[in-house]
Length: 270
View 1 (cartoon, rainbow, N blue to C red):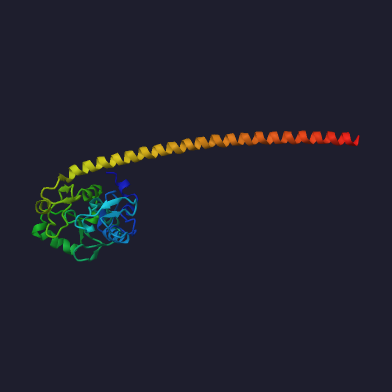
View 2 (view 1 turned 45 degrees about the horizontal axis):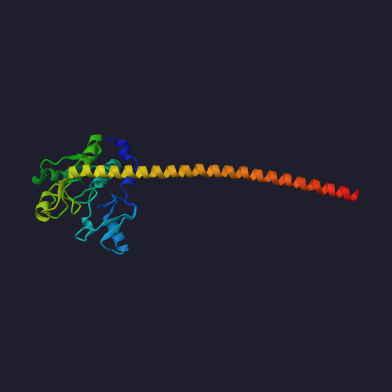
């Protein structure tokens, strides 16, 4: 991973285009644009509700989840990872807020499994908890390039109440959402399911196809514009030649008229 490229304009990349703040609970629309959940809700209400929401950025319509609750829109997990990377990068020079006690600390550590920051006091408590056995926590000031990559590769866990320890492994094509095993068993029986990794490959191919189609369309439009420019240049050149010819003809006609007028005057006076 090219971390120099990753860090370039990272704050801008993880800022919502609606509120201009860092994303909070980023939700993704079908056009792949993401916005804060609160911004999506406000925009949806402003647009009058309905069974679809228009993207604030590109105006593409996205279907509202079957539950009717916009919190069930797909979560942009990759953005959450980038937000943590930004916090870690900037946290080396500032204080970070503990995700448990809200205490600010310049010696905070990051847990790759909990995906939150721990102050020194809570980190000691965290390491002794039985259900946290095997969790990896690293002091923010000790982060190296490989550690930033690990943040982005971390497993993602279910956000539903009671299922937070369940890793998200499946994608429901009917509901367009990611699921843990418990969600699949209890709420998505008979639905078309795919492993997240498989669906990611499919989505990448779809995105590449869309990008290639847009590239071809843009190229075609640029060719049309280029041809129009050439045609305009030819017409302009022809018009300039015509203007020159007309001016020459007018000058010659004026000279002829003036010569005849002088002959007439000379004859009359003679």
